[in-house]
Length: 282
Image 1: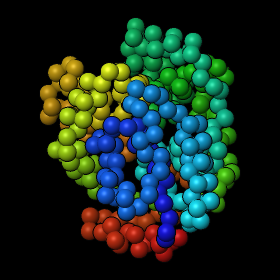
Image 2: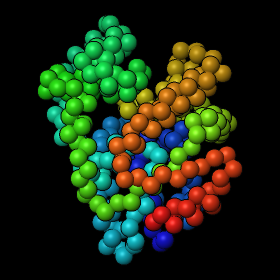
Image 3: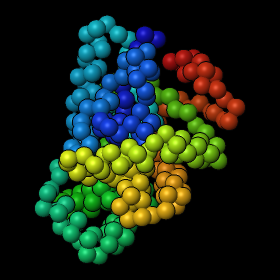
């Protein structure tokens, strides 16, 4: 197509985090330009607003150079896709005081207690947000405290279908058993590809990992293994379980993209066959 890849992944933005994010290698990136990879250091924080601003710059750059429409690499962060294509969620801004207090309460009462509080005030968010997703638990409770409304209600207002870009959404749908098999295989490849060594190097940096990078799927579990002695085989199993839970949450998230063209894939479907189907839909 003559296009370029615009990554839509909240973890691939971090430098030095390659194995655990399945970042494309140097040869792939030489063959096809990729944007929004390696844009911040792992001790820094990064927001969806920053992503949208940088993505818009990349899209403008591609347009000026006469490239065809960018190809957004889907499968990373649904929130980023939605914010870029439909606009940012118009919720209240972050309130440092509220966040500090919620974190203090979590240290005192435990994160399960905060998750139970979320389920009480916003049952749908409590069901959608995993008990280990501390950042989203805090954000949902913060929004409720600042507005008096569940974040789920505000997000429904966000789901009005406005379009900032003329986008075609194409999704690959697999049976859950097949998806889980692929998740387990991906975790195996990450471990054999040096994820433990990558996390050791990150922990050895002069600056501590930022909250977002340190809670990344796969990285958080390896940090627990290195710092608290969780056996590696148990750690690997935890990564598989948490990734499958994340995949379930992603399936729920992608239901918001109502105009998506879904392609069915199974164990026998090749990448080339899927690429042909994508081209036909485009």
